[in-house]
Length: 349
Ligand code: SF4
Image (cartoon, rainbow, N blue to C red; front, side, top):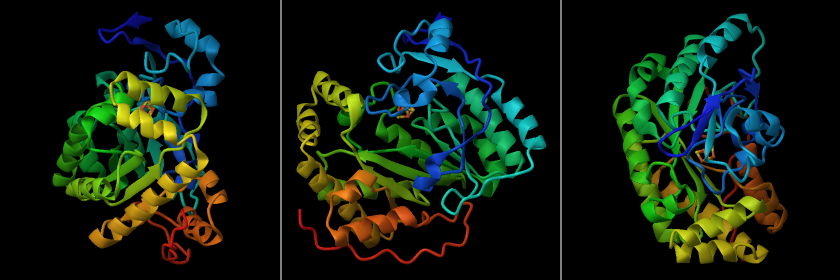
């Protein structure tokens, strides 16, 4: 184990996993995932990863390799890298005969959804080999990173991969103060957008994930945000509101407060009231759909299952239709027999 200049404990990940089937097809993202590391130095407060089995079920490994006592509480302060993953994946794909392709996941491989694959130089090196192995085997590859500027070092790999790769970033809001408050170590939103614009300029397909939008954003803010996001000409803009669940949410509110973002902390705190959360979440989904349509932007909503349970029948049909249909991207496209999206119902909240 060693500790770097940012105070992050690093080591080697002994995990044998190479390519795993994923439930992220429910979000129209992928059927498989490849994760280049365990742990993520960005340490976003709302991150769901530390509460997944990947972290929860491996306390011995975390303690042994990076001296971590509590993988959840210490999230953001440790990373175990899988340095040889690209080479192992290459061999694995040579041998693999069956490939899973669901209607919503399209057989796509997500890199990486349990860590940021370009969080630093070492992870970037692994990612380069992973993307190369996947696209050399003609597997559609969806790269998600909050640091697309660093990913530009591999522009040659992305350009060679052509239609087999798309790169996206999570850009929930353009206000750097608010974003940095709860995504403490990740690059600022302008930086993320700049990286995606560069990829787009060089002919690489892009996507944006507005996930999660903040309760401090009103309709005008969301419009301005979508106008900015449109600058990278994304093939799709995914959107979801925040869901105030679990211990991570407490940490998110506290982090906003600690960073002096009082308004954000206050508005997040109000979401603990279910009626307020339903109002905010349905409004954001409705506004993003409306503005996206007006702008001709390919938007795709991710409504939460819990939210669908608590809205009117008409709203349920509207929101469920988004869960059932494919994203509007041409990337790895398959035929979609789903019916068109019903119009947005009049809101009762
Ligand atoms: S970048 Fe992604 S994986 Fe990393 S801490 Fe943030 S949300 Fe979690």
